[in-house]
Amino acid sequence: MNAYTSRVLEGLKARNANESEYLQAATEIMESIAPVFDKHPEYEKAGLLERFVEPERVIIFRVPWVDDQGNIQVNRGYRVQYNSAIGPYKGGIRLHPSVNLSILKFLGFEQVLKNSLTGLPIGGGKGGSDFDPKGKSDNEIMAFCQSFMTELFRHIGADTDVPAGDIGTGAREIGYMYGQYKRIKGIYEGVLTGKGLTYGGSLARKQATGYGLCYFVKNMVEANGKTVAGKTVLVSGSGNVAIYACEKITEMGAKVVAMSDSNGYIYDPNGINLDVVKQIKEVERGRIKEYAARVAGSEYHEGCRGIWTIKCDIALPCATQNELDADGAKALIANGCFAVGEGANMPSTLEATNLFLQNDVLFAPGKAANAGGVATSALEMSQNSMRLSWSFEEVDEKLKGIMAGIFGKCAEAAAIYGDKPTNYVIGANIAGFLKVADAMMAQGCV
Ligand code: NDP
Image (cartoon, rainbow, N blue to C red; front, side, top):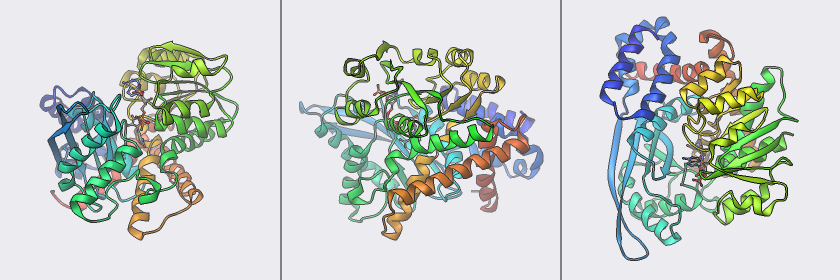
């Protein structure tokens, strides 16, 4: 790290001492982009980094709602509008009891770089609430979503901030939020993405993050003289990203042998039967444990971290932040895993990431590898603005092209700035940063 990035990072640590996830993301980003400032001394003069690390706006609000027993519940809602230099804020809404400002700032910061990497005109933001959708009735989910939007509506819009789904926010929640927005504002606009297909959603959006991850991993693996077909794969999580990563990588000829949820993991040496997972997770909203009771030859193990001890060639962490730590990384490396693709945001700890890089495991960082979701959200915005719907194949083709483009940008920046040409962490951070930095410089001190 050079003197400028160290100084700014120290300042961040002093001012945000209790925000561990945010500081973890900021440290990785600052370490990666440090070489840029040697080539661009004008950035320091313009205080660019000090501005870049600080969100433009953070909104925190009360979300009161009434549960099925008639009791009043109160949750906390957030929207972090991080950076709008290259377009309207864009990023998901996370509904999970662990949500706090540190997690949303880390996600928003990552989102700025991710959205830049897509090549599309979208700035970065993130939002959410500590509301836990698990175990709630449809009525309670609707009551929460309506209350959440009753405050959020005044801060968002098709040209200002366009939220989307994330952990705990799927098509059902987006539908309730969209309905409430439309009711309050009285206009029909593409203010949210991940909408249902009957009211402005895009075909292939549901699949986009998982499919995009596989397209990125295939590009990365093939650029390094290897293949995906015939390989054994671990996919953690069993939510939206995990399910469609499993689907696409299987279609590419690989075999997925394990998936998980926050309670434990299933191991199926014959290859995961995704129809069973979809039935349990998408239809019944059940637990992954139930898979073992339905599929002969499979096993269930309590605890989600054990998944990384299974022998594999490729690992796709698709659940949540910091799910893959140094022990998990060591187990994967010892078992011969040669590629890791992050479907989730920051699933690998800094120690795990460094172990992968030091041991020449091909490592696709989340902000590049899972950018297919937000890229397709931007395609949904375009379709809404044009009042058109593209076919599944059209969207999927565009997604493939975008992911190939993102891999190309990461590889190019890694070759120029990285300690080695396969350091896609440096590549992704620098390629994402440069576009935003140029736009911020052009727009003056704002
Ligand atoms: P979902 O809510 O659909 O699924 C999340 C999955 O992760 C579930 O299987 C869940 O299990 C598991 N999980 C959640 N918290 C934990 C935890 N603390 N420990 C272990 N497992 C956990 O979310 P998504 O699939 O949409 O998102 C997954 C990741 O991908 C997140 O990091 C998200 O930010 C990222 N992402 C998502 C995008 C999208 O388009 N959806 C786009 C880009 C990134 P359980 O049911 O037990 O909670």
